[in-house]
Length: 230
Image 1 (cartoon, rainbow, N blue to C red):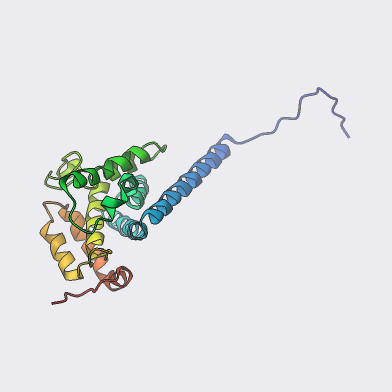
Image 2: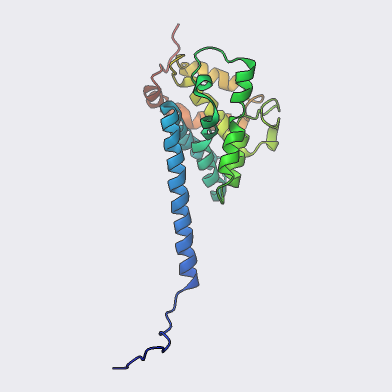
């Protein structure tokens, strides 16, 4: 048996650089996933309806994006943006978020800051700068009349255009303490009515094709009727 004297160098141990890089990448992915889940849970604590809304939106957004042929990197950023598009509302006072009546001009101006608040927070995470841009621009309008930058048409990131359509539709059909959600036909009518002005027509058409067969289960979850009530 070979004896190693004190002070003799330790035998070399070979580590594969490729394996080490892969391990570090997996650790970063795990950390990002945990942080995103934690932030989504904070949204649940702020407003339970918002948390459920974000999860439902993310599922729809991913399917629309896949149907539209988005690449894998963009899909990942879209999923984060869909889950956390409302994270900036944590900076909005509850008195405004929960107000049962129409907002004043000053209150609405403050509410319109939430995409910028969300962008400011999420862009600090490494590799999520693209997701933060999707969040920043999810209230832009296809005709250029949205906020915060007044972007129009293809100037608006595709991820933002997808979130905009699904966010608006889900908000329309969801019941809140201060109002009842819209029936399916009325929500669809408003969606198509705003196609080409507020919304990207291609995204609208793709979303409707995917969502229509699932409306019964969605309306059961939102507590709204799926048919027009006269």
